[in-house]
Length: 306
Image (cartoon, rainbow, N blue to C red; front, side, top):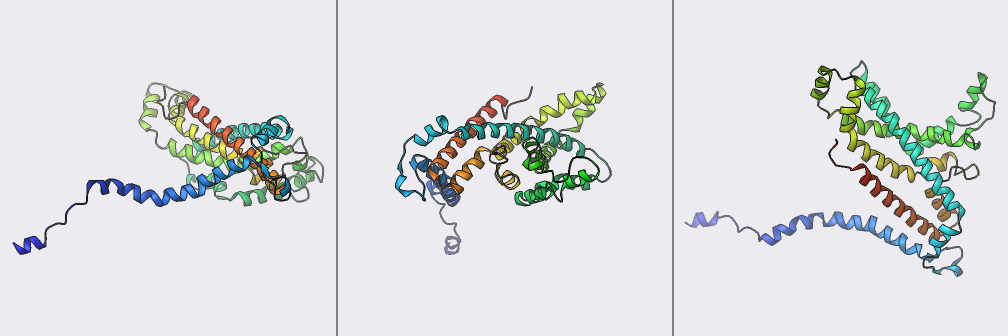
């Protein structure tokens, strides 16, 4: 009896302590998220209601909604950069989706050297944004880049710089960002392509469906959620694109490639007008949040495909 009592199991912990254990385990991660996400968001919103410029401390103070009023009614650069940001996002995301889908369909086929082909397709995504910018700066250099070799074969003139010409700078920047962004769509779409049951394609072939009909009635419906999610993520990233455009053009020439985030960066870093830059950041956050909700609502993300 004594031995039996010695090896008896300890009493089970109270039900309340077991229920609170998961919350205790996620508390450290929650605190880190609050520190690195919530605090900066609240801080930016607080500064947006102030005139805050360290170089002009005598003008600092509470501004209320003056910064927002100035942005919407008195600052033409705000509207110009917002329009260009929308143009940049639509063109970039649309082209990246188109080329990414095409590449995913190609590398999903069985052919000799498919592993090497996939590695080449996905490799630009592994290159950092700074290195990507440096590569394209060298390629667009007027003395040693693409235009120099085109001039050697009689196309164009020596010394031509696509990044300093207002008629070509947008296209040049789009091509540079396409090289980095297309693999993102290719990776996500290829992963979803491999989850489509092959039985569906075999049944469609038996019924006499062409490749085109199989693509629109089998492939696209299965890729719906992957396309919606990837376009949303990439649209947010392209809207916030600063590193590539800043390195390639600096927002020029003549402000032709200045996005709203790049304008915010120039306002805060160069002009030290942190109050107004915070107000612009708050506006950009609200725009992204609204557009994301509309995108998910209209696309019926997560719903069943008809």
